[in-house]
Amino acid sequence: MAADKTSLEELSNNNSNYLNDELDQKNHLQKIRTVGSVAMTAELFEKLYVSPQTKVKGDLRKTFGNPTPIALVGFIMALTPLSCDLMGWRGAGGSGAAEIGAYYFFGGLLQVITGLLEWILGNTFSSVVFSSFGAFFLTFGATLTPSFAAFSTYAVAGDPTSTGLETKGFNASFGYFMLFMGLLCVVYLICALRVNICFVMIFFTLILTFSFLTGAYFVLAMNYTGNAVLSAKLLKAAGASAFVTSAFGWWTFFAMMLASIDFPISLPVGDLSKMIKPASSKA
Image (cartoon, rainbow, N blue to C red; front, side):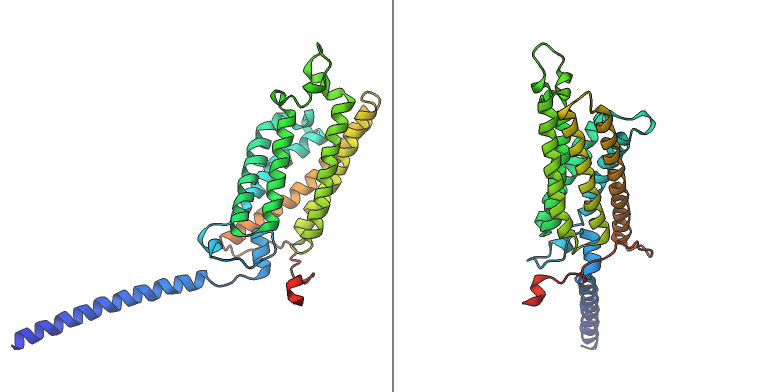
């Protein structure tokens, strides 16, 4: 009987130890969940997502990674070479036709995919921004691709298709596209006043870029040969402005990557979340 009692006590102790180990494991997992559920500050959220923090249902932001840096990679890797082309550095030119692949895959594909992911996470502002710029780069790349016949349609029958680039119809039409991209950036600039200074500067310099591009195509539409020099100067100014845009994009991307791995050094992006109070705070 004593032996049986001892066996029962040992079994009870073993079960107790097993249960304690299981409870410790559950407590440990709970601590991990608690750490992961700590609400980040508005400043950190806007640095990571370049969008004001909004309340959404579910925990998708805790389940999936942050897609925003993917879009920024696509943006800067498409725009930076284009800006150098427009400025004509080291003999570059041709309106960036050599980077058509970068416009499709970096500027277009990555940003459109990220726009969809941002939409799933409930980040409306960044979703719209990335989707629209992804569409811009896809459009720009398609315009430079001969098979889309964007410029060959304007060429006179029997002439080389490239002569369509010199026509009034093509340059005036494409100039309007640049004009309304600039208008879109005005809307984004106003919205970015609730995000950070880097984003404000990105859209401000993009407005300048699209303004110069609009002027370059419009003067070519007026007189392609006579205004060629003026158009070249406007394109160079657009490239310089786009290069400044790229610089702010690279800085923002670097700041995001450091924050994403909890690096001990952080780069400031000029948080503006407290400058303009949200409408919901007045309710």
